[in-house]
Length: 414
Image (tube, rainbow, N blue to C red):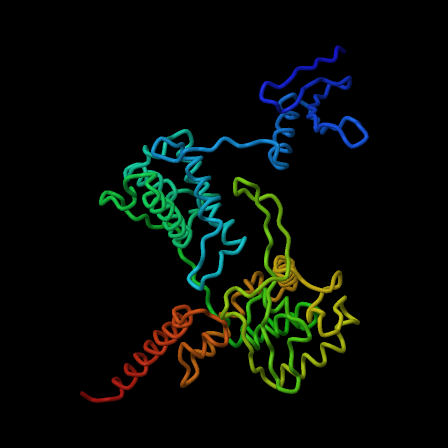
């Protein structure tokens, strides 16, 4: 087979076909101190694959200067969104002044993808209120396996992010106006049935704990969460040094988070679980816990090395598995539901967040408890989230009061 070698016109190296039929690209890196010629080679099954690999390598290593895209009304939707992702969205801050987490940023990017797909090939100036109404109508009616795909929360986030993108474009003089502020734009509603998280009843808690008691590594985590109300990622990142056995206090200082790497275009490349800060500044807190939990944790510290790979030094994680010294959030969730499904207990699936929700609901139902009590225990950064539990309990108490009044009225002779 003849070896064909051609020089790339844009200076990205030469392309040639090898004896085995594959294609290769080579880029000259000059010479080393001894005068030996240096070059970088990429191969592929096709010429285009080899060229794409080389282009990616050159771009990552600073050998290419990417052509700057001028943002204005004539910019394609794809370039418009990409500029927003990289220049603004990645470094956006929350109300507590923290930069958004990798997971939050990734979720934002996912919220923008349907917009990019729907307006592929269009210029951003072509996206007016009518086009947006049509887009969101499609989102609202989108179905997967016979069920509506997007919830009220998902659509709300999509509206928020796209609206923020257009507002920034106006501030930067990229566009004259935000089409979402046009009086013809209609705020979309979701067709998906909302399923609110409900607290476990006392009977459900008893059934859950009795089912898990025979599982050496799941039970300790679930019990700890039910007696503290902490987030799953906070419980799994707990270390022995965070527990003051004498003062009966647990300090929440860290959480397991997903560390996601992104390329220069804001696209996800890799992800892994690492130890990071709590969800918000107020998430770092100290909780006074019941005597029974302190006793249980002392017993668990003695028993843990025999039933798991958890260790017991202050810097070691409290909860481990049979395979490693700690859980991941995804691993814990999967193991919990897999075990519950096989147990035959009637509890086939449980979102770990329901444990936290249960504690918050039971706490808010106690006399004299206000939103600040709930906020302090759960580590919320404002009272609005905590007030949801209070409001829900008020509604339930109001309904109960109505039932009592009806009963009293029947006993009275008017």
